[in-house]
Length: 158
Image (cartoon, rainbow, N blue to C red; front, top):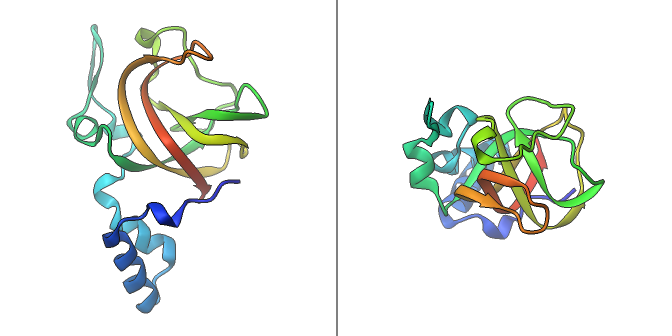
């Protein structure tokens, strides 16, 4: 499994991790506190749902194009090794991709990795870090449509 890349942490995160280690706090707890302003949950993705569809929350709009961290579950991929997967709010037994963005569920995010890799079990909680991207987009290779994506991502089990 691909581990989080420490080189992607910023100075504030590195300082917080160092202080956390000096104070006896676990490394991941310290790192989590450092990036609390860029953490996002499934409940924070959309501002409202109307007959016109899903509307992104102000937090998503502010974090668009920025590095974020998000926790969830990996939906079963279509292939044993792929360069993307779907992060879901709850464990799922099937891949939740939809045919159009109007059918897009409000509790999934597509994650694009830098390289193909083998995936984890759907019941294992993971944390994904990468750049948040919003807006309807069709993947030219697969034809899948998404409203939210995390690009240049890496993940680790938690």
